[in-house]
Image (cartoon, rainbow, N blue to C red; front, side, top):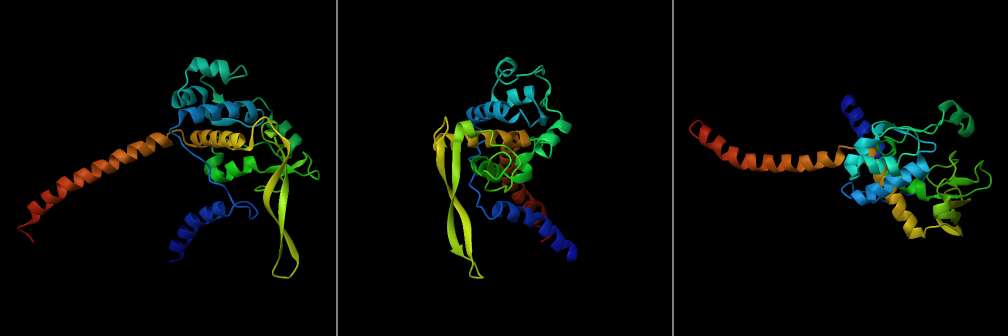
Length: 247
């Protein structure tokens, strides 16, 4: 019984944690569509331009990515590789991890499996909820990752926003300030809607590199289920025919 309970908790607790969000801030649903090659291509562009300066994706190769999202090796070489890397290499960046640890306090994590670790909704909300906080070293904080050590590298696209709080009384009668929304104080190059769409594309791409076979696996799964339905329709009457004299 204890083993069964432990197994249930092992499966359920990560789901509960993901649904709860960061520090009580609710997560927004990420618009994941792994069949949209256009979205994956836009996400790849954002990833190499804004993420790979600090983060790697060491479990993903450029040529595998090209094949899966509908690009040629030449298109990848011309538009998505800015270093001396070859199209068959993994997506590593040039930042030394030891130096990165000195600059940021911890080396920026590899992003190959970040959406499998945190969840697509978490990453989608995280990327969109940076806000101005002059008390932080980089001048920004984050709603789902308080005291974040990462600068807001996408601020030129999103602009800068300040938090909007609601005041409630806690169980002990004291006032509690709850972060509920944001107010744009400095516009970026994208409108809020355009920025949300762009972050959807970026998270879509991160979801893809976390499991490149995912879309194909799901499509195969549908055909397997259809085969089992057809097989059941054939083999069940056959089974009844074989066993009719015994029953």
